[in-house]
Length: 257
Figure 1 (cartoon, rainbow, N blue to C red):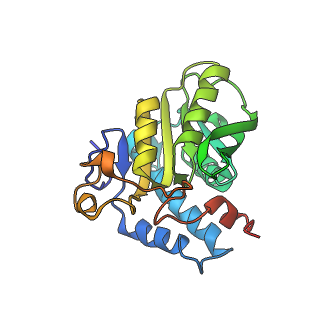
Figure 2: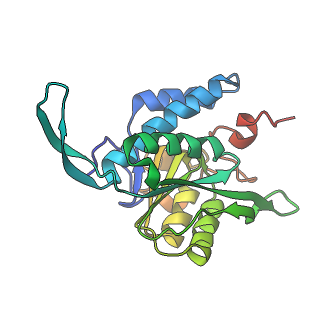
C-alpha cells in the first residue's frame, strides 16, 4: 500500500501521481512565465525534495534499527535500510540539478558510500517539421555496475518518453548487472509518456506531481485520468507539454535567447 496520498487514475499500479496540494502550488509557480532564477532553482529543489521523500517512503527497503539517544536510552523503530545502494542518473540538461538534489538528499538518509551519480548527455532528435522522432545519447559517464542497485531517473518533464526509454535501454546494454528497481521522478508527465514507458519498460515505477492532458476533448477531461487513455492528449504538434512548463531545460539554464 502507498504511504502517501495519490490522485485516482487508470494508468496502472506502477504509476503514482501524488496528491500534494503544497507541491502542486510550488509546481504551478515553477511553470509561470514570470518565475525566473534564482527562484526557479529554489522551487526545483523543494519539489524534488518532496518527490524523493515520497519514493523513499513508498519504495525503499526498511529495517528495524536501535539507536541510543542522548538520554542513554534505546529508541527502536523501522527506518530506511541504510545499506541500500542507489544511482541517481543525471539526464542532462534538465536533469542536472534534480539529480544532484537527489544525490545530496540520499547521502543524508542512507550510507553515502552506496550513493552514486551517473551522467547521460542526450538530446531530442527532430524531423524537418520539428516533430520529435526519438532521442540520441551523445556521451555518458557510468560509474560502475548496477547490480542490485536502485536506479533513479530525476527528469522534470515526462513528455514523449523517448529519452527515458533510450536511457534504460542504454543501461541494460552497457552497465553490468541488473538493478533492483527503476524509478522515474518527474514533476509533470503526459498520457503519451505514460503509455510509452509502461509499454516499453513495464517494471518502471513512475512518480509525478501532475499529469498534463490539456489537449484532450472536454468529455475525456471530465473522466478519471487514464479512463479514456487512448483519447487523452498532452503534447502539441512539436511535442511540448500542454499546459506544461515550456522548455524547462532552457528556462533553468537561462538559454532562451
